[in-house]
Length: 239
Image 1: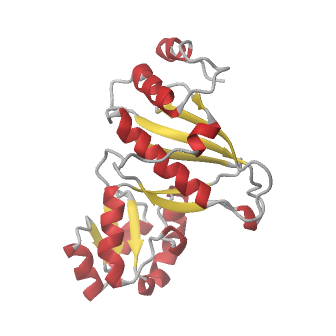
Image 2: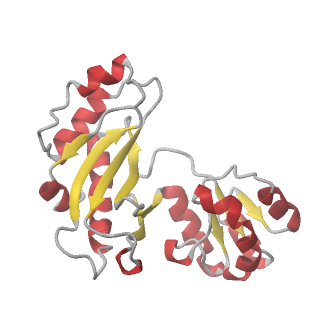
């Protein structure tokens, strides 16, 4: 195991590992302990009572965080003809509408954060799976990133506003950003509440027993802070 730095050890020493903090306490402590020279991302890690090996226990959905993620999101849209024009007018940063751009991506270029495609482009986009898939950039209908032309403006707007996809990993955990350390506490709490609501709604029918088993808050460089599951589960965003 890699040796932790002095600043991390000092921050970790201020976290009571036996305590389940309220969401408000956890957010305040995470902000207090952030020590990096950059604006760290605040992340929520959720342990679920599902078995990801079974198709009927997958947990995957998207959620639009009310206060965004605190970063500029570069959106690429795979579209042609009138749909490409709609995408440009709606604010897409890049429109991949020709073979030259497709070849550029196939060669490894991925200087964008979200990829959206129209259904008619998926036959071409599918060939880019080896590049887009491992980076989590492959358009997918379930994630709301494969949409008809008339829905492009809304999809682009949501992506730029803080649309986040969450998906359970092989260890039954979710790892989801909810903002930046520079956010106001209430902004982080609102984002956290909306995410928790979305996770609850995404519960598979096949899941048995306790569904949300552990919730941990952390910053990019900081230690994990365990959050009281019952209080996190009942969170609601402010009006």
